[in-house]
Picture 1 (cartoon, rainbow, N blue to C red):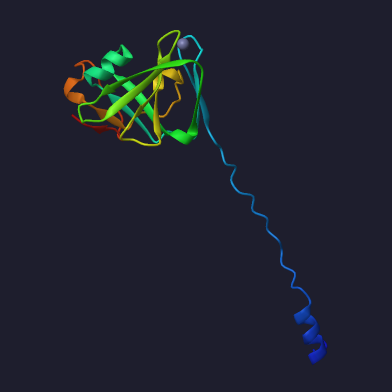
Picture 2: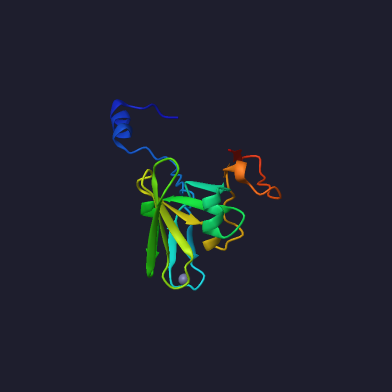
Length: 162
Ligand SMILES: [Zn+2]
């Protein structure tokens, strides 16, 4: 082994140190896009990303709106939802003093979206409009005091509210 002279040491300092380069590729980012449609297909909502919340409501208003024993709705950030097609709207006051505006197909009458004036920047889409068996399950079951006695919303993560 030969001795290193100061000139060699200077040269080594100037020479870029070779390091094995490990390129880490980021995990692929999967952006989920879901399509909700009314019954006749005239109105479509494309929802990008996961919903902020999925909730069941057993309230009398939700039962009447959905025409079923309960409603299941997914709330999204408004920026993540694009609605296309002719809709009519109807607004109604809520018991808490807020107002909800429902957007429904002008042809078949299916409610495809609604907004509440207390939830600025959010839009709610009925889960049934997605007709997707893999849609995220609800984490809230609300208005259980008016729940039909034969209904049970199950799941360890479900918050049950009266
Ligand atoms: Zn329609």
